[in-house]
Image 1 (cartoon, rainbow, N blue to C red):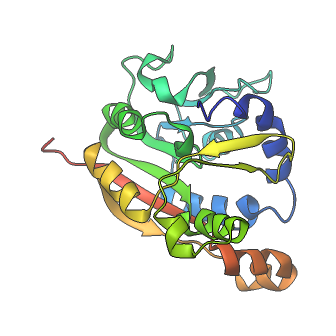
Image 2 (image 1 turned 90 degrees about the vertical axis):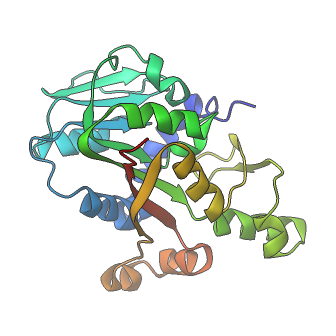
Length: 242
């Protein structure tokens, strides 16, 4: 099953959810991602699975240049910033996206999009080939324990059983209950081994949490984070001897 196809319908719902004042993307994920990226002045950025392009547009406004956003939905604003190009394309066929051939980037982002890749190692290899010298990939994924816990609660099984299960699972998103996503389960070791197979190593990893102020302002979000943990952020660099 192609897990990317529901995104064609789901993209607008995700953008509306992300824009809410109490969205975890606004409170936790994007601030942490932005910290890992550091100063982007004069840097070129490729945002793979960029949604409506809002994040890469913010980076361009902060000084990034010659940057590109790619998303399968093509749900982009009509007006685009100078120094930013938004392209409709499939991240599973990254090397074939028109407009990317022969280009390199200082920063390549997979912000919760990597799980939609049909062949994760192939997609990472294609991204690695587009990295400029001294560039890095910033990749985020949902904590796999979250999905394991949700399945254990649903199936009446144990956390360990579900964490190590290899059976595909489906779930209705909180963005639109009428759309079901199907995904392959994964473990932390699956992620690490996939990075290694693509010729990448982890320079750093982060598990961001709510600030103390946000915990007090949004206790319902803190309760969710305390149970489901949040996301993993990886800063990946290529092995130069491969």
